[in-house]
Amino acid sequence: MADAGVIQSKLQKEAHRPPRRKSRLVRTWNRNKALWLLFLPCLLYYLIFRYAPMFGLVITFKDYNLFKGIWASDWVGFKYYRMFLENPDFWPLMKNTFLLGLYKLVFGFPAPILLAILLNEVRRAAFKRFVQTVSYLPHFISNVIVASMVIMFLSPTGGLINNLLAGIGIEPINFMNEPGLFRGIYVLSEIWQHIGWETIIYLAALTAIDPQLYEAADMDGASRLRKIWHVTLPGISPAIVITLILNIGKVLEIGFEKVFLMQNPAIYDTADIISTYVYRVGMVQGNFSYGASIDLFMGVISLIFIYTANWLSRRLSETSLW
Image 1 (cartoon, rainbow, N blue to C red):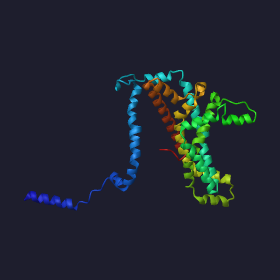
Image 2: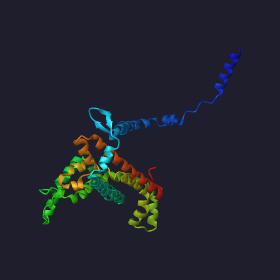
Image 3: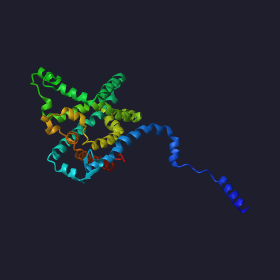
Image 4: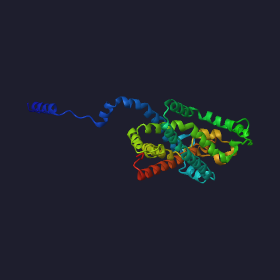
């Protein structure tokens, strides 16, 4: 009887106990289930193709043998990192990569901002849509096609540019065999290819600016340039700062495809960069450990760049990535 009374009292307590609250994670999942399911393919992509391959970075500390496999290969420590730092090509490669990335940042970063501001000032909607469409299209062209177009346009025999120069009495120039011209050609082709696509970010930021600010500026008699300087640019400054930080982090991450397709032995002095060197030593020569070590080394340098840029932005302004 005593046991029955104890059991009955426990049952009564359970009946009067308030229902247990679900954890915040469960409540968030139940509230945003559809959004999480939409995000799932993106999450799987990064887990499978971005994070899982990171385990292969162990080969940078091993003398990787394709037939032995990763774990059976011999440990060599920092051998390949020292080999790269002591390589006579180290400083020329770093210089070429850094200068190419710096020129792209200095000249390529402001270009979409300027285009977005100019499009924002256009009052004819049809012309605005036409310019946007034309400027977006090159982004979807393959790098192989873009590089081929550049080489064809700059060809000394029948190239469009040299035909125009011949029309004004200038001798044909072999642009693609001039080391001093490669960086300018590459940066201009990058601006032409991606300016329209990168403008989307700033056009979206422009839509968030309160129209009343422009009306107040009109009442004060501000000119268009004054409105751009005091209203438009401050309105999109957070987007500018964020994209600038990301671009600083990618200064040394110059795309392999276009540089590889546009370069030739005559312009290696300025066109040979880290990614093309990694291709030669890692893929062509089969030294996978050495190539992976160089790639990881450059990734660490890029992380330092983006962290420093974010730290400076947080100190100098109220906008940062974290």
